[in-house]
Length: 332
Image (cartoon, rainbow, N blue to C red; front, top):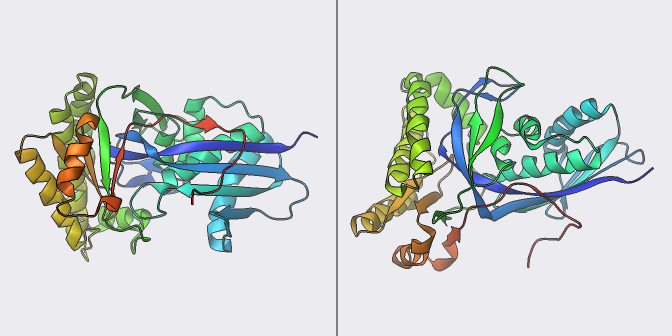
């Protein structure tokens, strides 16, 4: 039998119209359709090997064998592919995350998208990318978008079969993002915990689905028109709407740290100086700056008045998943 192996790379994505809240916890169906930009600089490379020699699933992340709790989540994800392929073979998953894990930089998105692509190859399933995005969603909601490059829409759908991602715009124009990496440590409150608590207790959350639908409808023509100002204004407002639900939850909580506010203010000052730059944030302290990529060096130079250069990372738009010939370890 030929080796049942697959190796895949997937890039992280940052939502401009956020996914924040599930209407089905098990199927990971979002409360609202959402839209993201895939980034070139952050990615996960994953190899999966199915074999009758394995008696249990194993996960090796960044050269470290993972504990049972983390491996269990991977096993549950692999079960979807095993069921589809009609096999019970166990697997070893070896993954290198070129993204700080669980720090608000969408590491789970690239991780599960890469694993989905590797499983598709290893088991010779022949799934098209749209169907693969549905499988990726079952591991992490935002992973459904990392199957594709550029701007990607995750349509909330009516159920499991049609809650999928679709490419919206290839982003092959002067657009980019700067990451202000304020804290690369694991979050105290995970995205899953945070969105569930905000959804259950924030009085503002009842407004979220309808307002998000309006924001999505407004940002799509702006993207097609390459209108950075409009895109940025919508994305910044939607991000602050999301964080308003955490501050208004009961009890309230926040992903902000003191430097988060410094970064937001710095970006506003840069914009006031005449350089288009707009804030977006996910469930974490790190600030992302949407901008013309051609302005990235100027913006980072101004940000260095507040932050060291090694906390500033500029990225062009990234591509969709790619199959690899071999797996490379993390760069030294």
